[in-house]
Length: 293
Image (cartoon, rainbow, N blue to C red; front, side, top):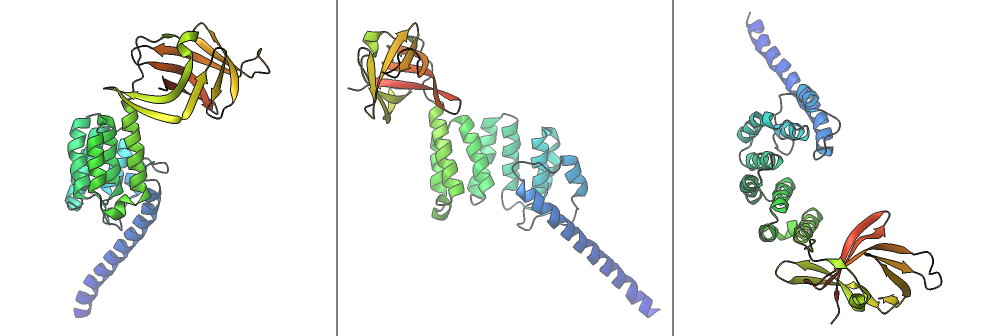
């Protein structure tokens, strides 16, 4: 009788241990897939993930709540309204790494509520800056708000080893340039077709910003004469102006243009505007030039 009394709870303990070990093993296999595709879910849908992910353990090997993945998959499928209960659960499981603020900020970002997302994403980043996802989520919001000041403050807040981490500094410089270019003046209401007298002279590529701020790019320069022009490499070509377009030719063949695109001039900004300039493999861009003084 005593043996049975001892063996029964022992059997329960063994069975529970087997269940926990099996669940942990199964979870680790699934986690490997989840971590590999964390930012771009492909293998699972949310419903499949929710059905195969064991309830034990409820965190990854890095102590991140598994509900973070559930929220990520729901957002990827546009099921924003279903995320709240998993965010609440993640907050209870690990309140110390600011994962709750990170998820709140991410959901608000998906909703397009960038001012509110800023509040939560900022808390998550400054609370746990060594988490790259916190940094990226905060920067996503700053890009939408075009907030270079907060972006610089965030990067300066990082410890030196994180600043030197390519994942951090590449994202910082990429986002800084993206935000800066979002202020680029691209609308020139007074732009008119270029005439030959206007285009004569030396021109340097520029980027115009509000308040008369100009960034110069000396890698692209052109010197237009009456019928020909030379580039920075001193190569000479022939050009022709027709209607609102400019055509470029080799001097040895004036019948077939090398390229052509729309050309206008803004008197207000003293800027020459070339639209739909072919640059590489079917890509086009608008370029701006100011006269070299």
